[in-house]
Image (tube, rainbow, N blue to C red; front, side, top):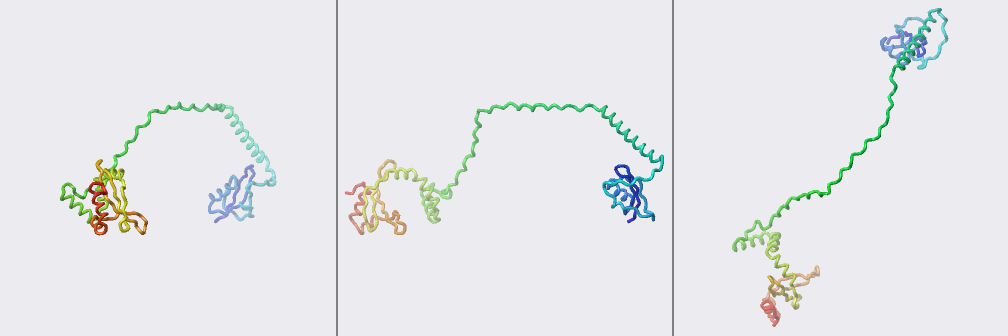
Length: 256
């Protein structure tokens, strides 16, 4: 880097001098100007007595002892400076006198809100729901159109353990009868038989009274009474009187 000697003036017009190290004269000018000085001259430094470097000059320049007057040239410099300042002030006064007065801004009232629109008293039309998707029947895979097909379908249902299909078949065929039978069910008599209870019941189907017997037994594990199979011939081998009562009840609904 080279050393440059510079001459600059501060903000009050006082002249300063010094040296600065920079890569070029342009960089030297920029660095001097960045510290608030007006650069008048920058040149390569000569071997004269070394002045103060730029870094030692404060940002706010301090006053220096006045130099000896050089005669009329110093007075002329200050007179020219005063004339320039006076001219600038006069131009500013003329510009202000010719400028238009600042407009008076009147704050207007906010716009009135739009009138409210009355609500339509008519309720919106109900949204039609999509029709329910028909549930697939468990009986679609079976054929009940003929006696032979019905027997074959019943065998297939048992072989496949198709309980959903069996439940649906019973529901569709016997639902009406089941409701009537349950609502008209009566227990007319109970008889003990080898730990079981034989119930003599009556109910209606198609408004006709029917008679039947059911055997129930108490489950030892759960304590539930559950329906168990009990045939007429099994009872006949053990209790002929009870078997005769069961036969008579099933036929005419009587114990004699």
